[in-house]
Length: 257
Image 1: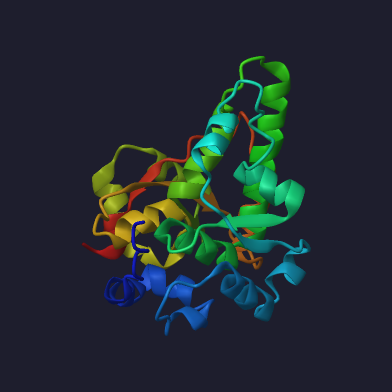
Image 2: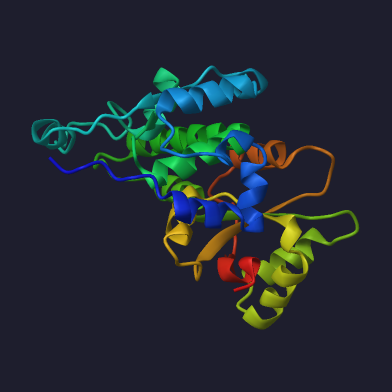
């Protein structure tokens, strides 16, 4: 039996000092002094202490995702097994109100961090993915992943936000981010670093392991007094076939490396 991975404490202390990461951890200050992997019940305690579920109106629970045995994995791969049933992530959230969380897992560590920062948006994203996958499965005999659900997953894993300020033209910012003009795009990111927020938990896992040269899908949020979480949730609620390709930002520009 393989030993469980140790929590990368030294790497975490260096990583959480980066301004974009520190901004996320500031919403969950319990993580600044972290010494070991938080278990799912620890994430749940933190969420409850910050009234996360009360504010979002859904009582979700971080639950331990157990590793499936070989027989169970084979059963899930059978053609008759629906993509919406059983243990799929979206189904767990929408049908069981559970957030499956693997122990001693860096990917799920960052996923939990984003849930605590963006609960409305995470719920809206997975609800929309569940809906579009349901519609897709009803129209297609072959059980394949819906392209629109794939786009939502790509943002969930590797997304970034830019919040337009008063007086800024959203259409101009969107046009630049969607362009291939990396010179002006890099200059823009460096000038407005504080208006960008990391969202993709898979991307953060890769970043902490030493690779920040990642192009992240970037959603532009409108100006206004609502929180980033409220704005993004509204956008994801109506995410559809006509939603634009978001354009991309190199995360290394945001970190200044």
